[in-house]
Image (cartoon, rainbow, N blue to C red; front, side, top):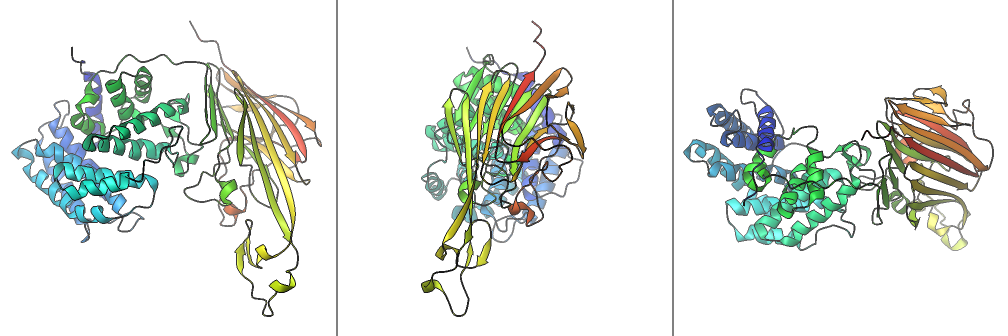
Length: 566
């Protein structure tokens, strides 16, 4: 017996498309938005569930947008606009929607003949530069390859498939834990997974389908209680953002339907829990009818559960009371710089207790302005127990040996890891100064126990706990500007009936800094940010525990929530 269709899902997808495809509105938009709007208008015209089904106004609007799109297509065939100049991958995003719209329009009959012809003209002009063009990020390879495959689907050309296969011959950048090399929820959900699914279909490559399934399976353990996906380990701009689950909806839904996986069905339902607001879903249901079939029965959520991803050095532990994330996978200790494309977020722990959320735990140190603690190593000591470690080393430099001196004093300009100067640093004897931070974390059903050990010269440090707005720290001393100080006794952050309790103790070292020590109780992003007037500081209700090291500190984090009603 065939699987029944999910009429409610299709109606919701059509409603989302209708909200975006108002044919009476005038839009001046970038090329990618224009192509997406044309695709949505064509889908709405073809869908019986849409208010624009068979509408001449939808056809007229699509042609207006196509003229605008053709006007921003340069003589090279690439599209103008955006900060990437003459960009093959940016144009590939647009061509992917153009080709999908062409598949839909070409099968619709004479009513969409002009739309089909305009789409074919745009796709034809872009084919040459996409066939020979290059990329500059990992996910661009798959977006560009998907555009080549789509072009071949509508306008068969063996050269297009050969070029896509050339990109794919590099191997999909998915690691042993199921994360793509950029470790980004944004690019996994919006670029890599949809591109690999398309390539798997056009090229008959089941290995690409397997890669998507592995990534989605790993993402299950990164879904947070607030319906977002963990991004602290990302190497892209979403590492400092909250990213929703809904862009994963079509992929979880499709693979749940095709494989029968109840865990994917549960994720698909969760992704749609707040409603469907993706105008592109309608076109996807027409291009991939399997999406319209009913989901298999979802698996119940399994609690407690734990997952450690060694490749990203990220651990997650979830129970009915708390969801805790520990992270020690920054790229900064190895590369010694803050850079686009590196994982730079200094947050090493998060804790969710229902509405009470500890968004970020960070440790700032006043050591040569080298920035906050970012673990260079993460060890799993036992089940749910981890150690994060970082040793910072800098130096004072001695005079150059005689055979390295120059009469003109013109020495090489060298970056020594902290700053640059014309002093030929590698040729000089060094007097090194080191500072070591170790954080041991025991993950519990109701939170976490931290033991923080700071070793080295006597320098200030501050542990910053940033709570999501909505509550007030009780038991800590306010010090202004949304900040509090904790020195003795516990504090509680309460939102409704949910709360997180914090208690700190000193095992070794001086007494903790009091609320009058604003010079200590602050977050210092380090010179890589401050030298250009920037910061990566958090916002929210920030509680500080600080002092002058060396120190050994314990911090107990406890989540408390009402018992569920049975």
